[in-house]
Image (tube, rainbow, N blue to C red; front, side):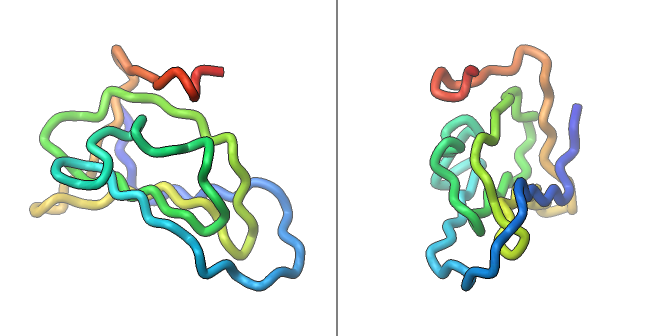
Length: 104
């Protein structure tokens, strides 16, 4: 099982560009915008976007592919959000699923 703490993803070298103000946060977890990690539109992420995976009692049995590119100034960030007792979300690859759009 993988515990998410802080994972900063940045692919490629940035050019001198002004930071984007259109970055989006994708909240994943019980009662949030996305209930599963696979529901996030990974193929449409843009520089500066953040995927915030919230703790839940059960592990997330999912896998995904990041096929987008952030920049040095605006990385694409995937971050675990602790639960009420400081528990971090668990990602477990056993019996993991991937949505068809991400199955390369």
